[in-house]
Image (cartoon, rainbow, N blue to C red; front, top):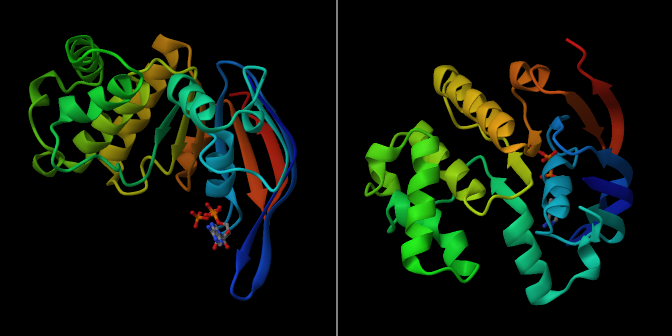
Length: 227
Ligand SMILES: Nc1ncnc2c1ncn2[C@@H]1O[C@H](COP(=O)(O)OP(=O)(O)OP(=O)(O)O)[C@@H](O)[C@H]1O
């Protein structure tokens, strides 16, 4: 599903060039649930952004579903990302002036669907994440857990094969965090998703199929969870 070959990423900063990813090789199977752990600043978010085509590597290759991500340019990359990858961030990044329904419709409207069909699909997925009663609420009128459910619905509304989540429970209390983890696992099971989740939440990581540890820009550990 995902194949990463000799991935390097450097950033130019006022203090000079910093090498954040230093030669990562990685394969992720279809339907796998992978946790990415590591100390702060290790390069986890940078890796996720590159896996999802949000940022380009300095060198190296990423294939998603056999497609060389960075051979795609402009509109072709946008379209591939919109169709194939869903993102969930720590801070939900919902648009505050739009309702839950409108936020979730957005990726389908961007893909060119009519408002009517996009609205139906968005209502269905919001219902699947337990928010059928919150369609017209704006993000500010929702709890933190509900906001994250809307963000998960938005990530899944285009039926992507790959879900990338960066600290999806990082901003939530323990109870709400457990509900979000349960929801992600339910979505994985019902939709056959491949999931990659950056997390500092060790029980979350321990519940997934595989744990990757990134340290100082390299893959320092890769453990299958056999329990
Ligand atoms: N656009 C950028 N320009 C310059 N440096 C950057 C940029 N993005 C990330 N970095 C640096 O790259 C390093 C890795 O950042 P990254 O966000 O990938 O780490 P992380 O492992 O996700 O950390 P955390 O767990 O704290 O979120 C950090 O030192 C960060 O300051």
